[in-house]
Image 1 (cartoon, helix red, strand yellow):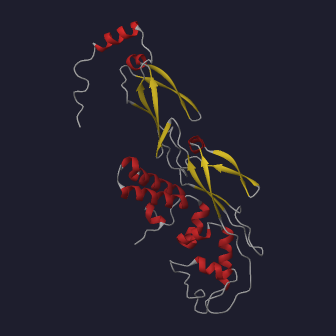
Image 2 (cartoon, helix red, strand yellow):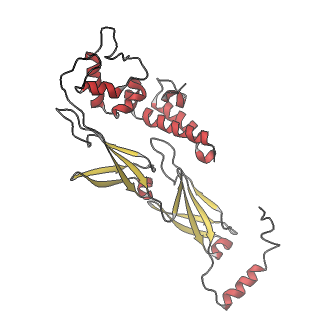
Image 3 (cartoon, one colour):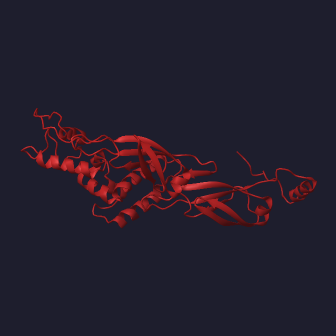
Amino acid sequence: MVQDFYQRLSVARGATADEVKKAYRKLAKQYHPDHNPGDKQAEEKFKALNEAFEVLSDPKKRRMYDEFGEDAAKLGWDEAKAEQFRAYRSGGRTPGGGFPGGFSAEGAGVDFESILSEMFGQQRRGGARRPAGPRAGGDVQASLDVTLMDAVLGAERQISLNGKRLSVKIPQGVETGSKIRLSGQGEPGDRGGPPGDLFLELTVAEHPLVRREGQDLFLDLPVTVGEAALGGEVHVPVFGGSVTVTLKPGTQSGTKLRLRGKGVPGMRGAPAGDFFLVVMVKLPEHLDDTARKAVHTLDKHYHGDVRAKLTL
């Protein structure tokens, strides 16, 4: 049986917003891909949790979902379109209480597209023709490229569509495939019908230095031999500012320093990821005789073969 959004989050339909958020955080942590590497079932579960939380954490979408179920998405979560359908539904019932063509108000599989086409003057299944009425404008799909910094900090972008300038707010936490809806910016409606919506599908460009894995960020941090061997404070840029980290004496290449909560912010109340600094000891590019002697002296302090445990 297909679970509804409440069942996915294991909450009752009357759950408060805080209860929904708490349930999501618990399950999202359990099924996060970082905690289940290579587990496709956990990955699909995590995606299903995000889909449910996106709707149930939004009061407007939750009200429409409670009324129409998952078919609310076919209305584009648009209250104007929902109101038109309500008006049609209240005035177009058959004597038996159902919709024209045998649709049931309680049916889980209501064919909104067919019903909406009937609303706007197309041929009814019973053979009668409804008077021509308002026709909603079509939705428009477009793509938008954003930077990783935009995804982390949020941003506002200006785009041009059909000669019109539009301001687009990029929320924190977006990823490739995320969609932004601009209500009423789609195709115009006919005969007084509402305009459609514009849906922007985002592509987050790769950063030349910072890698993203889910909500976590990774940066290779170059340090000198002296900083790694003796320790010290190192200043590091992060999105929106900088931080200072302390290296312990004897820090090896590959050591990860964790900046909690400095990764990609979670959407709709989800926790932010972390920023990991991966230490990379960088040698001088040019060595003079004095430097070479120093390296030979340092090399004498290795005990045994450093690759003795390297096996495949």
